[in-house]
Length: 77
Length: 506
Image (cartoon, rainbow over all chains, first blue to last red):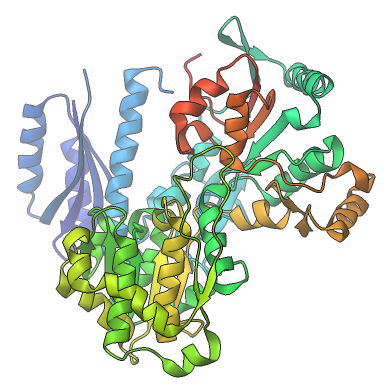
């Protein structure tokens, strides 16, 4: 049951769009920085496979410039 | 602490988010996550914002706490605070979470037949009082003790001092601030003859270099680190992280230098060696303000019962100091410190450059070092040799780990030797305390008893039969807990713990 946290850097001017897109993917908790172009993101999935698929979906978002992994946990079922 | 997978998972998610926010704070000075600050604020809330200090660490950030119907529901940095200028770190953001935590104790717990049983507070306090009385009647006043904390407020510390010294009449009162102050204060006293740190946070706005000695400020003092990063971005100030491991501070710094544990003392001496060899000594400052002494050297292992120093400090001159440093050339020190000759010379050149302003920061890495007083002295030596001290942007700065180590422990007297505004050894200080407490002066003993570690040795020996621990967990933070954990379980001692959260499943 992986839980991972990232810093998501949006393409300039598309922060709101990226935030909406992440939330609509589900399994994502997002906190935007008030005064910087960056989002703190936590993903919460059931399996490694699901985590992998979610990450691929996030990386495919056109409003995302860079996704940097900060921490990862794998909790028991 | 967490009684279900769901709760545990929710906790881990919070930790994951905290990691992300901490990482962002080390990359973007002054970053604000407003929705994190506003979490928990009810919609359309009409909040009353009250000023207060953050109670987590020793930085002293000003906070504004939003209350609704008398209940704290939100927190944010105080923009008018000279310390944090509106910033707040992840620890500060979550103060409300702690206040409202489901794990908060709402009743006393008394261990009965090996299990904690919820007990009305009045009944539990009666038990505490009866156990204290019993111990005093059987074994005297010095068989009861209290161990408090730099997390306690100043009024709490004052009351603790009044209860133990003014009412019961024992100096068996000490606190966890001893664990760092023993090094920091002794460092101040042996180098300068006076207590308390010099320098101020405004030095951050003037320094060209920040050298952090074993100090992960990005995670431990994030608000100050943000202010350093701001100066890095604005003026090109440089951060040098000198540590035993790579941390977020290392990655956010301009240079990370790793050393083998314990060899920081030798590297500090090597820096002094280089400063002298290269003619970088500020001769005028040294002649006017410095004298040279060789300190205590035979300090033993330091964990022995009733250890006392047998040697004495002795006066030396500058030439003798130069001879002493001959064992610490960069080439010799590099062999065992694993710090390259080039890096030792680089550090020395920073301190030695008369046109650069340097602040050295340290905290528990140096102050809970097994040779804490010495490493404090040695970093002071670097600043004194170069005259980089007590000037805007220049100075050695011992940061504090707790919010009220100075106020609660030192100023109102929760150390065995202290009284409010004085020490137990001085008659006039005892008289002043007795007057303000309205107690007979003879009740306050004139001799200190147990310092922090000695207090727990006394529990182990059976000399203390009652101990009240407040707002700290000595069985995690003390050195040599393998001795004190079984000691605290002995039937010879009744243990009372005052804390806000329970760590055991009910």
